[in-house]
Image 1 (cartoon, rainbow, N blue to C red):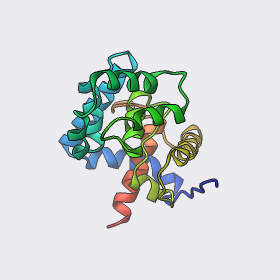
Image 2 (image 1 turned 135 degrees about the horizontal axis):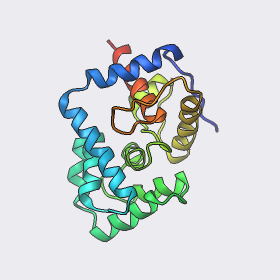
Image 3 (image 1 turned 180 degrees about the horizontal axis):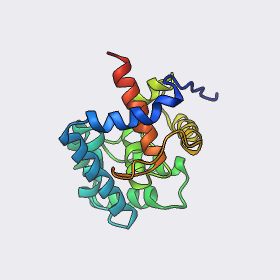
Length: 185
């Protein structure tokens, strides 16, 4: 079965929504995102530590951080090596991350987005709502990612060069999230 996505906000609103997301985020949320993408860069450069993993998980899900300590240093290194390998498929990278205690598909997608913001985006209930959908598994994430990449590559959203992870894919994620948040009001 192939997932179907229908963009709920108007394409013309996406750039504004991406900007609004950052403006509406509190200082704590902005710092958490900044630290997450710095940690992702460190992982991309081979620093496969619990501290870097924790910075990313804290950004995505504060409550999941407590479960990370249940993972051995060796397991964290092995899993992050797979996730950070440019040669790993999306499925292999996600499946490796799901081996970690405290990591579900949403957290795995956030870890991948922090490591490779030009390749991955976050699978989040708000972003999914903005695309008219809500199902979570590895195959679904691959389809979601492909859809988001096509949107980002269409240049309807521009990189936010002054923010962490200045990629069109990350700007799109911010826009979809902000649309969902403001749409519920």
